[in-house]
Image: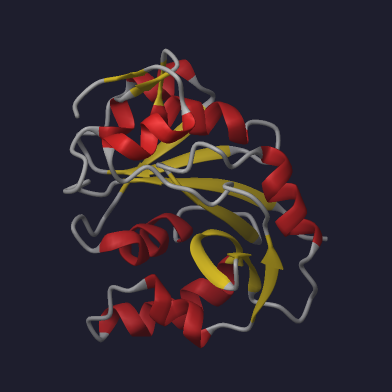
Length: 193
């Protein structure tokens, strides 16, 4: 029987929207909102830079793993974290996806079979590699050689994996890349614009 962990990726540079994980959406910082929404599926872990605010660790029952490959994108953060996690499967969620819930992750996890390297959310036929449940050993087995050859794209990892697509409806896969994105989904947005 598979075991699960949830990994929230929060180590990006956010060049398009600096400081976005601290932006308050209806009074709650974006990253804290994401963590609250995911509570209840599996133990939470944040993958982030060494300067990630420890207030998230204090506010939530989660561990923070420091990315061993800062600046190497989500693939580096996933490999760094997957080396330290012990579950058979890891639900990966971008830290700027405030509409994903524990129920979303449960839907993805329910679609896993023994033959899959994991499941990946799709919306309008497009795969979202930062909303997926991955077989941890498959990511390490397939992702490590890619990374060692200089590949930094999660899309390259996804292309190498046997993933089952699961259609996720609505705006659940929406991420916050700009101040205007936040305003689209929340009535009160406070922070850098």
